[in-house]
Length: 398
Image (cartoon, rainbow, N blue to C red; front, side, top):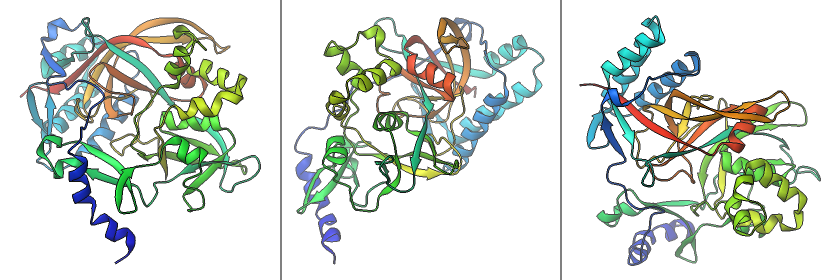
């Protein structure tokens, strides 16, 4: 028996010891994140986009549901639905989209056919805070060079996921990510350990190397992206797993240190500060101990359901609270971007989306991350989106 396998046999005992301590969650437990509402309480279900991408996103959720066992259940507030019912909901949507002659007819048929649930949001107002993410483009190489020297790593072989629910019922649904050191379960390496102390160096885990550590950091935040190689070919990478440490915002850190104001805390302003003060970069980036491991994918970007996310039609929410793959409806604001890349104004919009992703910073019933797509406009929208709004989920009536 190898030392590694012998150590793994110690995990049950060590985890029981670990559980004598406290396992915390990053937010207060939510019993009912969704409440049913009368269709008359929801204003006109206007959609600001064409239906092609909505149909594509719905088909991708259907592919996810097809992989699940028939016994899979989904929670909408106080109500439980089967995977068969969620598939039926999306098929009903596709039928309505294909056979409605006007927005008014579509709106009426959806309100008549679906039960609508609203997120309780956050705070006394119950609003939902919307941000955006996008697919970045980085320049990299399959070999380390003087220019390309910042690695993307695949999941290490000592990366262990421990399901705490197997040891105590009260921890059902909770897990930790760890490694084995000298026969003990210890937290996995932090960002500082990996990038500063080079804890993974020399283990053959590098997928590629890129030329910009700041762009690489934001690739970790976005979760997926495209690497443009020196021969002008491209490689798409997507989130595989993380190191288990909580996400910590470097934008909030810069605001707290008085380096930028809250109004300035966009992705562009954060990048600009890091480039202006490179001597502070390592300390600032290491503030976020969370670290992402990647995988190469053929088509992407890939969301948490292992299906591609769809530009402007996929959202990321807290996967412990909201039904995966389900049809949703959002109301918030989006930027009007001029040809010069400058945001002219923010305007209200609403649209149907599919719940197909999650994220380390997306916690609680009052957070949504909208996938903005790829390209410069998507980057601008994702980098500046910080808007309040409303989130609804829809499921076909029984």
